[in-house]
Image (cartoon, rainbow, N blue to C red; front, top):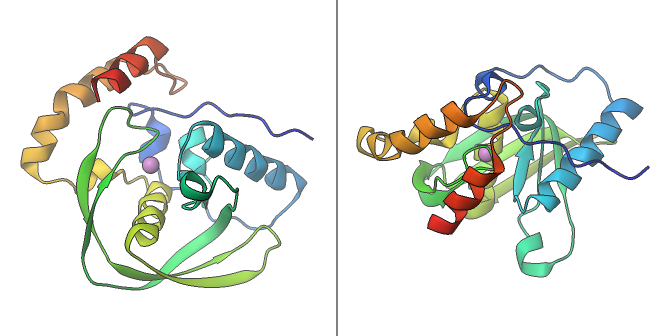
Length: 189
Ligand code: NI
């Protein structure tokens, strides 16, 4: 079956600040959802996408940190991920499909070890650094209702507050934002 592109929830939607639930088992319905999640990530040009960003409060995210460079799809699915080791400091400019128009540097761990299950319900472990570690920490945060803007200092929070206010105002009860604003904001960047 052809995967669907799911609407991405925008800041202002309550789903984005809720804690996602542990996944108990893999089944056909979930596999279809994961296929949709991947498709949505590629269509929206994301390097990662977490289930709550499409309104599903399950501990699942997908990343592909290579696609932009190689143009070859190599998605990695994380189910019930845990970050088991972290150290170092890495500062990188982040953005988020749920926060259009906002790009700010965030301080993260430089090296992490992440354990998760894949779509075949097999355990796997990855030790990653730098950019890939940033993407995983960002997506992992989504599963706990945390957005990258929550990591910003007071000064940066004040700077972005007008954009946040406007996003919140223009996001409807389904978490969908008006397209005109998004296009306008992209242009500004
Ligand atoms: Ni995000």
